[in-house]
Image: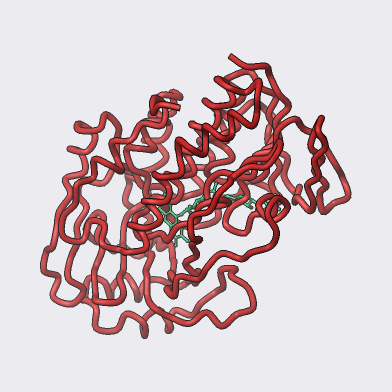
Length: 369
Ligand SMILES: Cc1cc2nc3c(=O)[nH]c(=O)nc-3n(C[C@H](O)[C@H](O)[C@H](O)COP(=O)(O)OP(=O)(O)OC[C@H]3O[C@@H](n4cnc5c(N)ncnc54)[C@H](O)[C@@H]3O)c2cc1C
């Protein structure tokens, strides 16, 4: 057990909320600074596999998670036009095999459960980090609203456009993968597509799944090649017609869902060549801030959750020497996140079969440090 710190987490996304939860439970004074004005149920669906849900179980959050999301019965891979079945995953068997379920959520519902596990007033909203400075004794965070705070440790959990990463290592935008993701959440359509199906065409795909056990909300997320001609890599509104045009010729079951999608956004898929180090002085990165990955494997948030656990364990075990703690954290995580980045880039996961052990069998709570 190391000494206890004042820890500033930048970003109340997937990794930031979980890191704060772990660190508070270990006795640190932890505050999360989030640029968004409030916790709002915005965003889209998210798949969360047993390598992540076993963490929620250990934190006593599994029941809440089950109520907030859905455990699909089956996951399918199908040919885009004929619907020929390529592969089926019996999802409940994953629970038996890995000791934790495969779940899908509305991202906002998942965030609410993580948020509820924090001490009151842990997250300060409307605090956009503008600048980070370090002295041998502390770090100073300056926010866009003119306010400042000091902390002993800064965790950059501020996502793919991380300001913390930029402060430490200079400006370098993430790489565009060449594919965009159209996203839409569909309610009230009366449609009842199969539980969780990825429709594979040679150069594009459509993934459709429910986000609630009542199966009253359908998440549509796609991948397709498209130049990104806009000035930045921020998601943009898209037209329903673009969506229909991009996936013309897909199976009628897909077309039905595409036609029901009225509110559509378009996201550039971003990634980064693995880099090192992930820390400098009192500041350390996690999640998309250090290893953004394409969404093809549905493991970006999974990596942020695993990072949060391993980082909290390293601070607990080696925190008297932060260089040692952050070095151990990166050493424990780098090979795994690099492999996920690589495999995800290839976009073959679950297409025609897979051995999920190396992904789902990983246990961030016990992996050697
Ligand atoms: C189309 C698509 C589908 C995906 N599907 C899945 C999936 O099914 N499963 C999965 O595991 N992953 C999925 N991902 C990836 C996943 O969304 C990310 O990998 C994950 O959210 C990363 O978590 P994070 O904590 O690193 O960052 P984020 O969750 O992005 O959180 C970053 C937070 O930091 C805040 N922030 C940013 N800058 C500042 C600042 N300067 N000051 C203060 N706050 C700041 C942001 O507002 C945000 O709240 C998908 C991604 C995409 C694009």
